[in-house]
Image 1 (cartoon, one colour):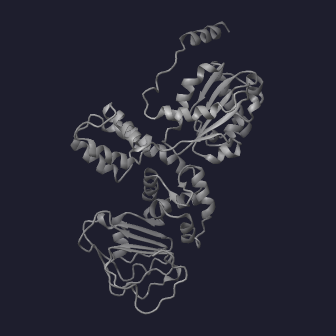
Image 2 (tube, rainbow, N blue to C red; image 1 turned 90 degrees about the horizontal axis):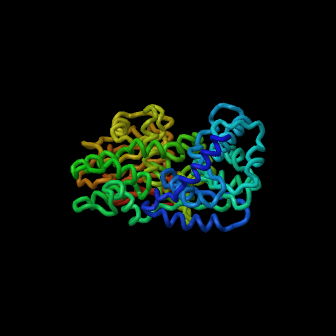
Length: 467
């Protein structure tokens, strides 16, 4: 007891206002917005959520809040990285006891506290004004264990919950939520430059390279920080090589953070995530539902789940937006599958092999083919698409313009019968083959093609919507 009193007195005497976050780009704007939420009910205890995608800075904002306002509370506690704490293998009651023991040990600065009932937090904190941060919550049981009711805590208490999953906040009736937005272009540039050059602007000769990084990271703070640190003190030539590599594959540290949300999805939602990453980013949600109407996916529920978990955003107009780095996570997930089990093909060399050698598949649903990435042209077999009976989505495009024809068609080529998306840039033929059955098509798109007419004769189109 004497040691604990001495430790508490020492902590209070040594407490100083933290300056750790003073120079952090954009933090003051976040804190101002959070402060208005935290002060909306001066008297009662309150729960407040901080929600947004992985890597956007939720934990950083919560830490800055904790540092700035801790002195106004009798006790404070920052419970970091709660994600996965419900996967320990013990029963639910034991799990909740363990979480409560951890919180009480932290808030009272007393290691190894033991409790024997789930009323312990309310019993010990109901008369105290406390500030508690529950960071990276990914399961409702965590909130039920640590902050089930506001009356567990004394008047003026604040419990801040950070999460990627908006649904958890709604299920726990947390309506005061701060949705973290992406930084502006100016702030993104300053975030990156602070980590890359330890200043707020790029040195002479690095300006265009900095813009490439910001575009590559799409303003995600995690990406900007990791990339800035990894490129610090590198020469211009080194930057070029590193950026070329990262344009095709994610930095391991960035992927490790972003992939967690994907890994925790139901397998159906994982496949929908892959489809959006490969075909449907920036598409209208009604169009995506039409594309997948004959699939076994519950698209409405899947889109809702992905949106709740901050893996996509759906605008007021219904446009699906997946962040560029999350899109790379989805494409990497496709790459990691066993080649023969893939439902989506995006690797150019494998696609060439499939199109030239009559690959037969009853599970292949989509091909996304960047012809700019192949060294030579591809000669499509006449029977290649006929053997892909379940192919629904075919997107052939080029990210770098090439005046030469890289895709060569046979005279009697057949398209798969159930095709719903046909997007083909620089289509080399003057007319589509008569075997194309457009009754299932939702979108037909040809850019920079040599088409003079769609097809010979008359074809019946039922839901031929986007041309």
